Length: 299
Ligand SMILES: Nc1ncnc2c1ncn2[C@@H]1O[C@H](COP(=O)(O)OP(=O)(O)OP(=O)(O)O)[C@@H](O)[C@H]1O
Ligand SMILES: O=C(O)C1=C[C@@H](O)[C@@H](O)[C@H](O)C1
Image 1 (tube, rainbow, N blue to C red):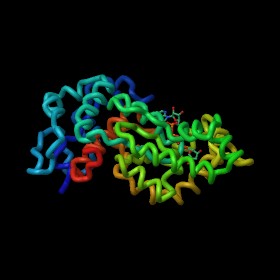
Image 2: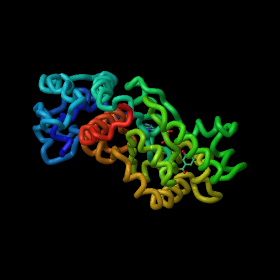
Image 3: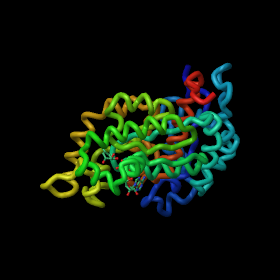
Image 4: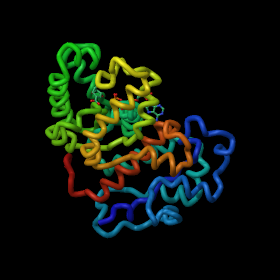
């Protein structure tokens, strides 16, 4: 059954999304043409359909109240709203009932924003935020992942990481930022699948730029002897992503920051704000859950 049929796409004002490009023109109400570019769900039905409330097919949504935002959308209220946090909170309230206590596991390459977006999501949902890297640091009793890699080796780190995910998988109402490489061990998916998994898909060039800006010292798998920080980061990320692409793609939900930027008319993907990404994640989680009501883990 198509989940998209039962929930509206949430529409956002441009200044909610953009870090740098939210200039004068974007702070006005968007033109009709630019409105269409802002829609977050990319399918052929989105053009005008998102403004209309659709009735869910009978039996598809026994528990979720997923259409409460629609009257506000129809009134044009959301388009005029300048408050990204308000949108986030509103969407989080809706998605809460669909989530029914299930945790969210964010997966993605290092630097993709799992921690940043995870904190925002957890606050909006009233969930606890857990950074799995920090969890491992505490479990091992060392200050940083870099130190653990140096002194104990990657294999020990991965063992602790699996143990962390196993323990976290028993706990409801958490947003977990997993380590970038957590997806590689199949056993970890058993744990991650106890909640809803969300892949933050950020283009490698953007990741490399972001990581190069702070240096690769804190990223043991990207720290090489030669090359400028951007090249080190890009080459390392490229190699890792080839091995991981398939695993990331098996997440329940993918948030493509490239698509999001394109839909919003934001030129540089790095200018899409964490709040915008969090809202988009909620929209996609809601769609996923609407199609998977039988997979309830916390009845
Ligand atoms: N949408 C965003 N806009 C601006 N800066 C961002 C955004 N997302 C992340 N950042 C910045 O990028 C850096 C990396 O982000 P973050 O730590 O959230 O990534 P991560 O996926 O948790 O990385 P890791 O797996 O290595 O822990 C941080 O400095 C953060 O402030
Ligand atoms: O992508 C990876 O393999 C890693 C990402 C970080 O979150 C840390 O878990 C560690 O640096 C390894």
